[in-house]
Length: 470
Image (cartoon, rainbow, N blue to C red; front, top):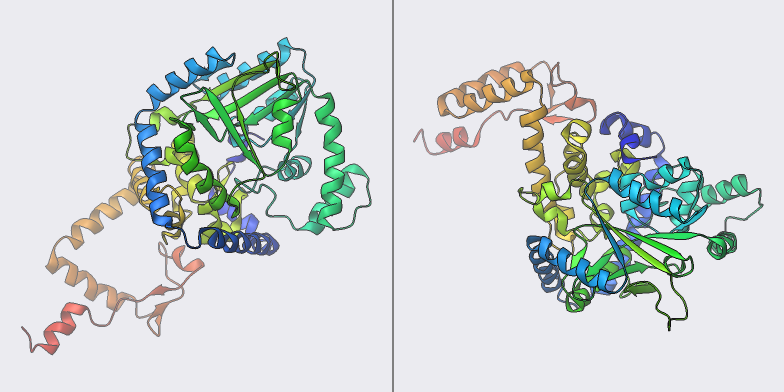
């Protein structure tokens, strides 16, 4: 399923489907609480705000000078034998990867975790060409055999509990596994190891690229990332163009921010730095290393007020605290990027016509901004996108209504008149200061919530009464 295929219906429609399965919200909420708890322990005693400020400064500097650092990285990478391809669109990236694999006669491809590959719909494209593509991250493998997109940036199968995963494995593989995580994991390890040993090519994502050395780095908690990148003769890495850092000095700041924010670890189990393909003296590694640098709409964001969304390091922390995401899960967003990051990034990449409703998939509580390890003002971006969407997408009647309303409230006398009329109009609907069922066109607002009634006395009216009319 590609990103385009997932954008079916509206957020409200997709969320309604997810809310019909309350176990999804319970599974996600329990997992998020656990991750947030261990995250708090890792940051205990640290100057978190100083770390966030440092991370923000690094990402802001890099993105502001992105063209220069990409050129430096590409030159250094190619000097060490890496084949670099810059893809303007997702389609160009897919075509390049397909061509490389076709030319090598690849039939079996193992994949490490890569949100970029999900974004461009790589797996179904390769499968249409007759290749077997196997996700080797356990969470990604679970959603692959369940024919689902990922539900979370870091933990793709977070919406499933262990009983559901056991039933899925037993149904797909004809096994009789118990609902014990260790047994399920052992079976997956044994099954996937045969794939690693016979794979013609491996595909991974890239967490960070290092400009000064032409290196790429991969952060994982499973050995699949290392095996996907070192065991097959061909390694293809997919990298969003913004995932660049000037040097290893900046990496020492970004790595702990990523691991602590993503999974509550001081450092991940595996951290690979790859600089070119295998050299003659190396005991292992691929004969070919290809890195596909993907634009796919990112460069269009650079000159806009939303540029800082490209600072994102894909830690998933904003999803973990978002009350909307915790109830409906990632599938409701209709994109590989869920939660607040998805509500901002997807409309910018996919366009307002396809995903213009996502900025409204937020309570604007600001928790996402408070937890972001690089200080992206997510709630401000959500508000900014709401304004942009309203400007280009809102029906003429809605634009006219809000224009009329703003002009009405801009004058104190007209505002007071409007308040008086509203008090009288709400009498048939207000009960104890709340409106539980409003008439059209406000009925959609009260379908899932009560509205506070217009106050019987405004602050200014009360002040004049207390001060004797002054």
